[in-house]
Amino acid sequence: MVFELERLVELCDGVAVISLIAYFLTRSRYAGVFLSKSFSPFSVLFMALIGGFFYAYGILTGVEIGPYFISIQILGPVIAGLIAGIPGGFLAGCLGLLIQVAIGHPVEPSGCLVTLLCGVIGGVFRLLNKNELIRIPHVCILGFIIGFLQFGIGDNGIRADILDPGEMIEGILDIFLPTIAGLVIFVFIVNNLRIEAENTRKSYQIEGELQAARQIQLGSLPQKTHEQNTLKLSASLIPASYVGGDLYDYLELDDNSLYFALGDVSGKGVPAALLMSSTRMLLRSKIRETRDPCALVSEVNRSFLEDGDCKQFITLIVGIIRPDGVVTYCNAGHPAPFLITQSGAGAYQEESDGNLPAGVLEEEKFMCHMISLNPGDILMVVSDGVTEAEHGEEFFGVERTIEVLNQITFKGPDEIVSLLNTEVKAWTGDQPMSDDCTILAIGYYPKK
Image (cartoon, rainbow, N blue to C red; front, side, top):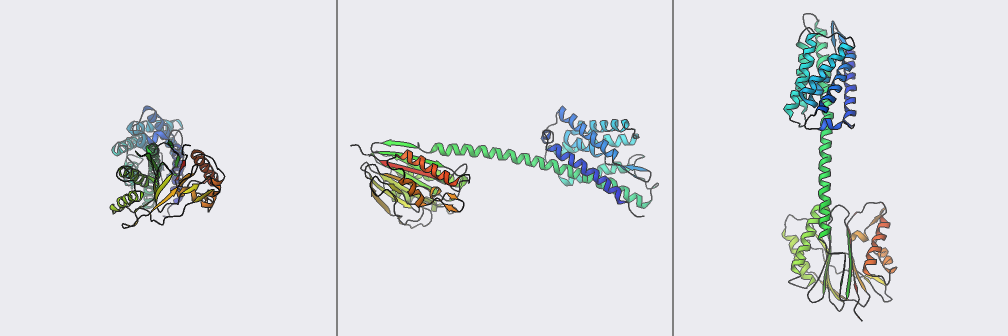
């Protein structure tokens, strides 16, 4: 006998329609029913209605094989049971049987038993999984159980004494394959919905934690403005992400000099932020012991290299400004500072000291540099997030930075920091920041 595969295709078409409806339901405002870890009266009634509808649709799309009528209506109560437990599966079976009677389709006692029993079994599987993701092998087992009930119970069961061998095989295929396929597709949809919801929940949780980390990081930095005797200071740090690897710091010392530092830890995100925080604490502790910027940078270098697993380094400028305007600083691989003068020289960038970043070479001998500020001069240190701010494939650059600084003569450190931030933001436009943007400006204003 030639198998009539059209019947199997028709049944699978019905499975596809049910799966499509199930998908849209999981994307509707009722998606919470499929996500809830406990079923409520609403979810039981809701799934009973959906299961009853699926049951009716299965009846209407059934096919005949020999003297038997085969359909996928049993999927309705089973699906309802998988979501709303035993009450949902049982009520879906009852509603489906009522609809079957209403449309004039014959109902036999054995069919009623199979329908209600399948709904209960779906609910039992739901309880056994304890709200976890349902594993596909378990679903296949459930499908075999449901198919076996349809296959072997009562007068509706497929009996070898009535059907010839070809019809027998077709009946088995028509019962088992659509049932298992429908359950697998439905569970796959629900599992994906639950995984997506869990990932979203974790994403919101991580985002909240990162927001808190950002507030803690920025809150741990000193004030953005500071004044002491002959000096005025302004600073800003704009992380490219939630948390960044840049740092700025300053501290008024007991001899009225000012300690300052600005650095950029390699990498981004939480690891860089943690290294930034530990570096700041290390510098703060050592500034009590020495006023030599090179010695301070050497301590940072030693700290980075002591951790053999640490593959990161830091570019860093550490300096001391005396009350008479003399600046001694050590530059460890960082962009050289800028000097804004009130003389005809205007703004320019200091020469690099040639030191390597801290954390690269254990025996690096860091060299210090010394400059003298004249009244009204402003020393400005920036991270490479300023000079390497991107506009397409072009950087903001040192020359453009100097051009901006030359346009703001006779302005204070706070105005310079604000204007430079504005210019960098206008340069990048809507393009996301590629690196943290940190600026520290210190003006020398001796009393007359």
